[in-house]
Image (tube, rainbow, N blue to C red):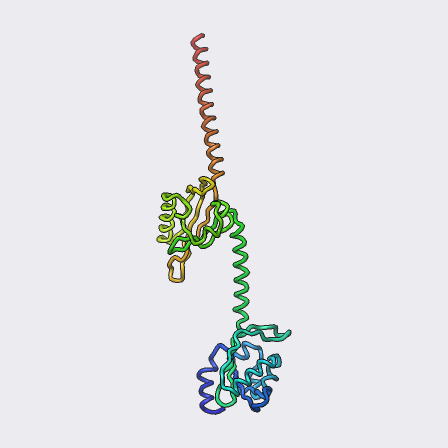
Length: 286
């Protein structure tokens, strides 16, 4: 190892968390003559191949799964001294499994090429799991028997809406998104909703509204609503999340029960008065 290259490798390459291999094209006319000169510890960690044990060996002997077309690109980088970005590729075998890598080949003096790569399999798996979780949560929200909505904290325009919200308001998602309360409700009612939203965002706390009327085209409904701000990393509101349960039928049932109780109380009072009158008449007769 030449002193200047050794210093470069020790100071810059060895500590890197990405894999870096330096290969030499010993025969410019033979792609298969690429030999491994150096490799940092990350190569072993990311690929499972002991790079120290393979120094000086042909690249294809250490990594027999590399396809010929990629070997040809490495060799071309050596000859033409032009870097090549592969982007994301899959590499592996049935034993180790297939892994996703981001790979770049860069010319390094004479007939050498530096192959820089990062194993992003864990990232891709995490992204896939995140997508699966998001779909799962979306499915739950979509089928909840409660209106769920998301508003921009800045504009208070609707950004998300579920099926129950569409059914409650009698308005499609297509017509709702990008619009605000003043586009759908009477001015005074819309002003009330906006003021309440702004207060929730300012306090940055959950707001529980046991009862509030709402007047969609289908007629007045009563909702039990909870609103909470969604904050960014700095604690600033990004969105307002709301969940509203339609309690109209429950209120009607309570009203019917109250009216029944009132009638019953009135009937009992009238019956009691009548009984007292009858008792008084008998006492006077005696």
